[in-house]
Length: 288
Ligand SMILES: Cc1ncc(COP(=O)(O)O)c(C=O)c1O
Image (cartoon, rainbow, N blue to C red; front, side, top):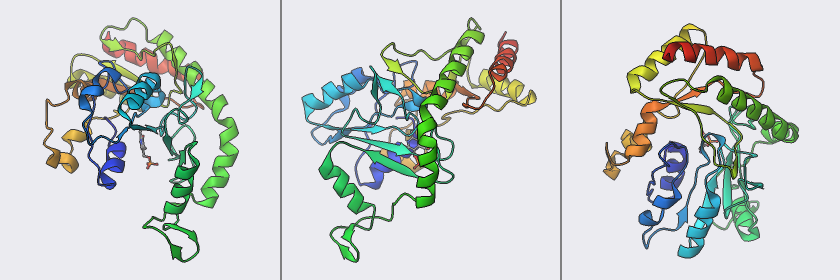
């Protein structure tokens, strides 16, 4: 429930977002809280594999089957990640991918794709992305102009075979962060379930002690020339864009707590390992 892009996709269709809290340490939807959010009007569950860590798709798939719902995965941050050795994006009825330049596989401009093993859905999506047309100038429904730009597709073709190797580099850097950041008071490290194989789109720590302490840490990192970001400082339900939903402060305390504590440290497959050591040293000094 913490990425506004997923909300925008739902509301753009005229559907209603029913947010579900993440697990207390995040980052993903807590399957144990899903059932209480299902109503007779619910059509789909949309797990977002946030920060590159896949959500608990076995539990979600079970709930969807029980209630006759579709599962639409948001794989924007998690291309290549796996749940029990099966790729995210192939675990629901459809998977939505982003090729925004900063993603694990990014184009040099905007781009995206949908993965599905449903031939009818694939056919409809191909029509929708092209003005609702299969045959030039014959429009069978109201579609969009949402084709993947061919130049971007050409870049992505070159990058796709490199994705697994780049993700492996991210994994090594994440393991190094885990090691170098261990035992720092008030710093929560990512805890990955043993069935999940994340791709570390981001390496996100949790800073306890409130937003002021996190701000101090960011200041220390900035002074050392290290960029750190907050993904995301304001949950979508607290954004002006969704003020009409009437789910204000206090409605989703776990998501709000994460918004006040998370911090993304530098992560890129092209980052040298010693850079992790340098970041970790600044974090340790600032928080000790
Ligand atoms: C989790 C998530 N979902 C959806 C999107 C939207 O992707 P795009 O910017 O390609 O539309 C993003 C990208 O910012 C994202 O991180």
